[in-house]
Image (cartoon, rainbow, N blue to C red; front, top):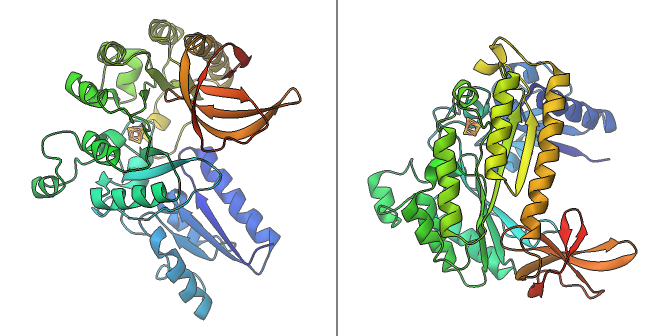
Length: 409
Ligand code: SF4
């Protein structure tokens, strides 16, 4: 039982709203005298509703998380009723400020996730994020580098750069700001990767989800020269059918997407290409779904995250006609998941017989034997049979076979 419960809420689907409410009410039930604080996207999306909810004491929206301790202290000093005045929710669409928060140590992982960007200007028709996270805001290079250096000093060898729309990193900087940060000549993301590459102790730089638009020949040719850069590209696809992509308001066509994948495969040796796909988007006919299947067959991703479309109120797609029944979405999802398993196996098989570099993370017992398990630069999971902990050790091993469906040994 805690005295203070802080729930970082999500609002990405109607279901996420419900889960956020459940979590807040569960906290209240555990300790009726606790201070229950709702933070984040759901607060940002539905402040009015939460203000009326007697089970929640404080509301803190996005770009205000940094003030959490001060807000809590003030509240505890007075312990007043929550009101519109002590609610920390700003007009997120208007702010241009990146909310800087520093990370020095993470939970159990050997890999540190570093947020470098917030907000999105894309407005895909199914997505609420631009409304609750606001416009693109990028973190300044010196702040990122200071965090990366602190993490490296604490022994982290791998960093993963994340953001809501990472490909837009830097687009909000003025010409002067770009110049001051030495990024006027190239994409902001490339510039920050190059700067992190110089940080002693960091051996791997991985990037989160990217839009295909960022991939150009010049961009890829510069990245391939950076040995610390991990050739693992998560390019959000969402659909392999142009008509569906158009209804989703995605800003590329399947042929453009395909070209980018081909380019990466030409410049990098066996890069890992992974993606997200949404099935059952409003109006997705059987024919459109088959077009997506055929496109996925053509690309053969290393990993596909398959999502059943879930309407989010307040987005154009939630009001579209021809919503797809749940059974149909489930069936399409099962078909893609099966396909994804095959592709994944194919990609992992490519590494059998090869020497790979692994950053080991944890020990895992498999069929009664201890293995040290980690990932290659391409995010292939590899196990080595030994009882000695190799956590955070980088080593080279020869892959001989599959140990389980998703681990090679
Ligand atoms: S690009 Fe991503 S975050 Fe932005 S609106 Fe589309 S799905 Fe949402």
